[in-house]
Image 1 (spheres, helix red, strand yellow):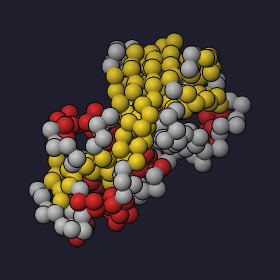
Image 2 (cartoon, rainbow, N blue to C red):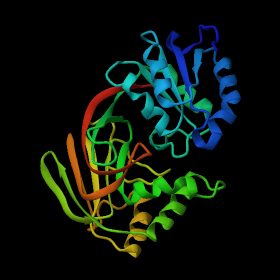
Image 3 (cartoon, rainbow, N blue to C red):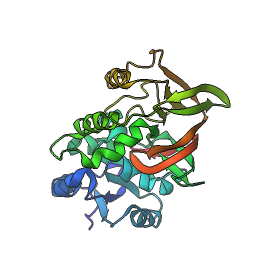
Image 4 (cartoon, rainbow, N blue to C red):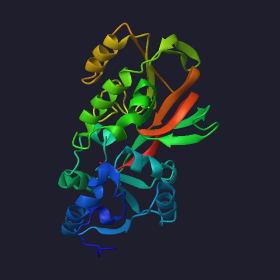
Length: 310
């Protein structure tokens, strides 16, 4: 599906709109007609890519002519599936948040359904932002390498992410996360972890969670890494110490507004490379996508690897 190029089209650029109709529990598919109308009103030249899965959509994007920008319509997972065609290629990326969490877009100040705000950012030149390259060890995919734009979590937060599909459908993204967190608390276990940043030990001992972030937030608005800056050429690691159930609830209350980094039970550091190693297989999520259990990850930052519109 295309729309003829108009002189008002930002920078004379053409776009591939990658639509994940299932994102946001079907929100992206339901609101596509309204987004399409906004694209046409603005006179943008575009084609729609709608495939049954991420690899098929990625293949379509990789086959696009040079210079065609990508508009990812969905959540963090939709963007993450396209990163192999974007990292290091210079192909511009725009984000239209319509997923469940939308955390990277939320950090940028974009709100689901506010198409005018999102599309108004397309007129400017792309700005480079960092990405992450992750190598997984253990049950979650031995030796598997993934590219991320936002970040990853291991332990408690990944386990509760796995429970999100069980949450009541009427709850919003943040409410679903809170529901899953309380449910996961019933089965809380501590597992020893060793966290190293730039080869130096940050923490070793019992823990419930560890995160390596390029963005500032996950879980639909929990500011797990408020010190992150996706343009500084560094990643940020946040690790908890040994916490009981009540302490976890207190930590969640601090993480939501991003006030936890000064807490004595929280350890954090920035760097270019990090390694997290767990004594037992531990739940892992990559940009909100739960990949199963893993025993460790190696994460490195790719400075300025993605050309982000707006």
